[in-house]
Length: 179
Image (cartoon, rainbow, N blue to C red):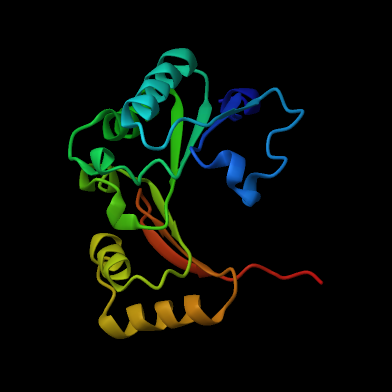
């Protein structure tokens, strides 16, 4: 595959809280490859409609769809919905889907079972941490799991990456901090 075929042609950010989210200040400005959509967070149909539109418009285009703050709706926790179907089948259409959430358990289990990679930062939720290691930790023993959690707590911006496709692996990363 040529490099131009492997590169993303478009990045679509779907984030109901985009206007209030300081993290995204200036994100995508003056870049025609980035599209920001801010649906009504209280209206699951609005989010589903945008997902359907993205699947139709960007099918086969090597597009990255980032869903931020979209997993909070109770409708999206259901085992079968447009959100889960989109995320699971998007890869067949040349769409890569990233879901950003603070609560792993807010995402339907069928979706969590079809991910290629999970990147985790420190989150004080014991339920979320237990689910994370149960679902993705493989044969890690309790002591090793506790060590990972302690490292996440103590090392700023550290993360655990669970790579869930062949070759399966797990690693802990602390980014270099420049002063």
